[in-house]
Length: 266
Length: 282
Image (cartoon, rainbow over all chains, first blue to last red; front, side, top):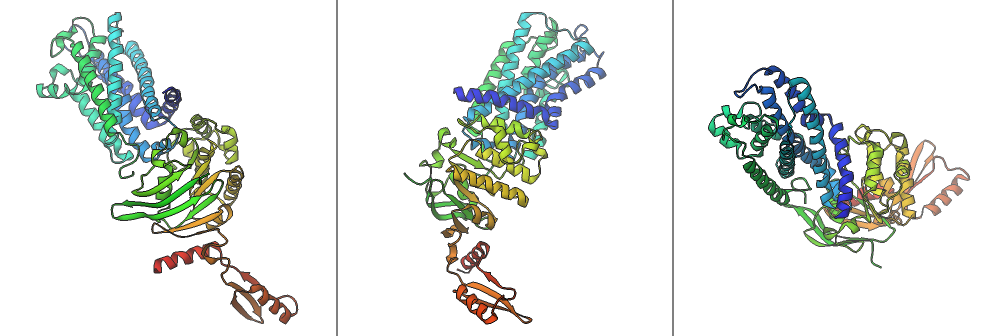
């Protein structure tokens, strides 16, 4: 196990290098939330959403941070791993004296570091250009921490499991990106969740992103803003429960379905 | 002590296609065996079973005394695998890649020395994705020999090499042989097999057709030599199993230089092609 951790740490550095040097992955998984925040934040800068003077830019920041979790973990891995399976990265690793856990430690570590960097930049942009206030209570920061960790864990495991779905590496983004987009539209990222049809709200409530955005709104919107939530409250306990369930489900699924070799090679 | 590689009655089918059909051979410690055969003959499948990537349907395989399907990390650390891969790791530099992979092995060679040994020192800071085909193969070779392997699998290692790079590579492999490395080589270059291999095994349609030293395979040593020369304006040839006597007689007749004299023994390539032809007609 020690060896898996030592090698896993070295793999984190290697994975991060590859993540940021690959232009598509850096743009698609890392830069996208900042670009969207600038665009949507500017277009809807003064549009109020029905509670106090909260603007859509503030509402949208919470959605972009939550989306960032999905981008850096699920979208990133569900596209990158099929490509690595296709281009023999996984084959090469399977032939090395490397504990398999080191590979997953490397992936998870990369996801955590990339997300952390992304959030810091998003918050700087939000504070400087869109008048967003950082949370002032320790309680909110603590919630930010646990929802980030649970979100990253569940979506990392789901990304690893989903990596068996695309038949080929080069087609992976065409399968994964629409899924992420649909979840964003239905989970209260691009629209105010309360304004969506009920069936859409119910659909989104099955998946992690709705709970991530809602909890991020608790973190970044002022007291009392829960009146514009569908339930009229933040539902932090339920959120933790759903995300924990997805984490366990993702782990079981990843353990069951993950393959090192391409289809038909055994 | 048992052989480094022992393969006995190995079978592997993909659906209806029998890729490996009753293959048996051994490779002794420190020996280099070359697997020759057309594409699809079963070379890569056999190699990948021995590397632990694929499971055989039946038969047994042992590499360093271990069943590759059950090899653990300690076993893997004693192997070197040169894959036929050229697209992975494209965003890393040569030195980053070699240094990183050195971390996996308990007693790896010095990364810079390995980079120098495969002739990539000038490209050490280049991204792998920017290397030419031959340079990329040399990187794969570097990663294969990094861990001081006891058994080295070379799957078409010199594809895309220019002639000078190929000769440098042969020198490198000869050094590894001198250090006692056991090598299983698959190649399409007969000259390469002749230079590096102690024995060659010819595979066709999943079966081993012949296996012997490069100079003896397919009765090469006993095959007739072709003597050719010129008399006046006419080129003449004679097939003989005693070329020395024949040339001596010719020399007496000409009383000196024999015009355009050549004594031709069948090359490994000719023997190889005739073996494949015999197999097809069988």
